[in-house]
Length: 120
Image (cartoon, rainbow, N blue to C red; front, side):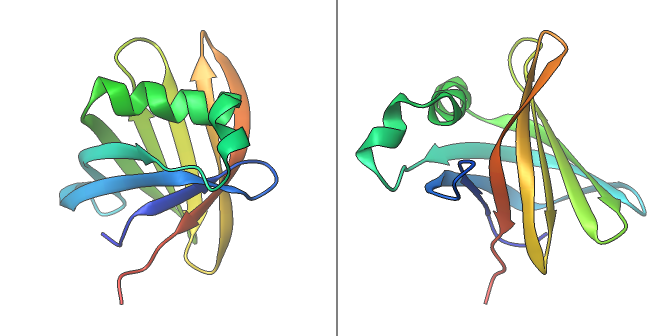
């Protein structure tokens, strides 16, 4: 697996990272599972009040999470399940920004952009 996932808001202002533990465990040729933690580190103080930051803080406070990553063409789609029915989906490609969204109670809310940070 590559480096962390960098998450931004809809205006592409930095919110924080999702740190992936290790390389993940292959389930099949296109699917991996592993563990991750959330590290919200907003670029601007005003972002601490936004819905996107609050969603990341909730996941950070809950500790380690399990993720599933599926390759879909040039994209990698990460699905991270919270302690209840909440879920975060992060879609990224190595050559362009992707997106992330929170699903709560069956309702999916786009939150911002996602960037794959490659290890040097």
